[in-house]
Amino acid sequence: LEKTQIGKLLTKSVKSFKRAKRTADDGTKAQWDEAISSAEKLLAALRAAATEENKKAAQGKKAESQKSGLPKSAGAYKIRLETQKKEIYKNPPALPPASIKIDSKTHPLPKRDKATAELSFSGGEAIKAMLKDFKPN
Image 1 (cartoon, rainbow, N blue to C red):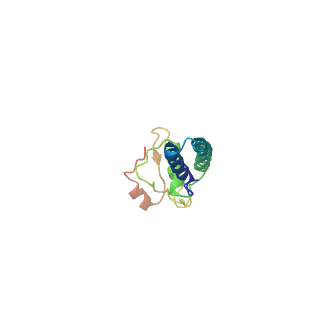
Image 2: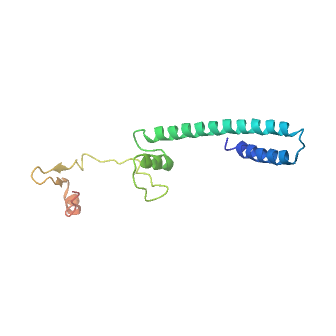
Image 3: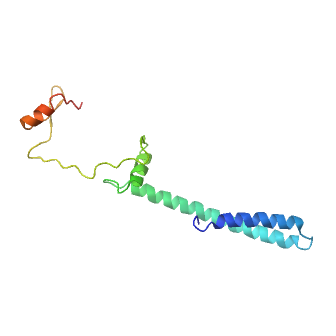
């Protein structure tokens, strides 16, 4: 409906029909009334179809935003953030990284200290020097 612009055409037609009715003879005013009423009925039906189309499109976007995993596009990511009521600092938002690979042999998962509840990272001497001041909590 948006591509055809038929709603705008019908609205302009109704206005021109009303203008023609004002200047018409008494014998043709009934015909203009009939044309106006049929055009307005058609316009109301098109408006109902347009709102139904918009609802279906919104449901499709919402269903896509609730899929698990990483979003496929920035638009889908933006819809996901809006449905989760997150603040958007960039428009369009930057997508998260596609994949993060952690080599479990060289960098095992961090361990939490039961007494202080701090995370401790184990690894080689190079990683210990880099993580000396890193405290994520």
